[in-house]
Amino acid sequence: MTDTEFPNFDTMTPAEFEQCLPELFANSNGSVSTDPRLQTFLESNPDCAALVRDLETIAEHAKSLFAPDYEPSDNVWNNIQSKLKEEHLDDNNHPLPAKS
Image 1 (tube, one colour):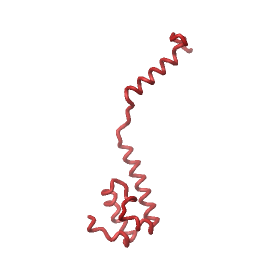
Image 2 (spheres, rainbow, N blue to C red):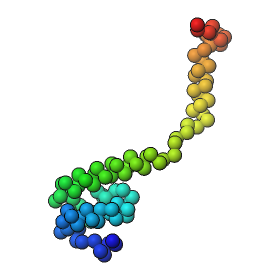
Image 3 (tube, one colour):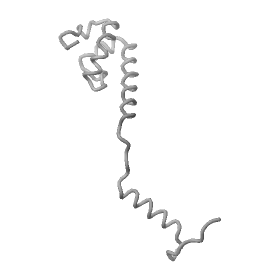
Image 4 (tube, rainbow, N blue to C red):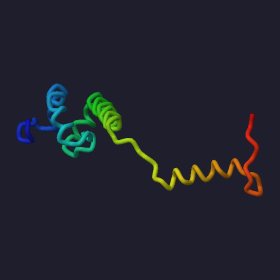
């Protein structure tokens, strides 16, 4: 379905909207609720607006499942290592006795 095949957004029925929904999501990067063409329809059809919000939330969380894992920089690891060393040194920078 292309833009020319969509029904009039202001007068479409919820059933027509549900038929268009997969393509609307595909063409909007998961952000259907901000599509200016749909504002009147979504304001007039709160159930459809709630469905869109739910689907957007699901899409957002699904994307995060495939996002690359964040790896802290070497600087972060160096800071952690430095703090750990500091915790194991006395005031004179001598190693503290091992805890038993």
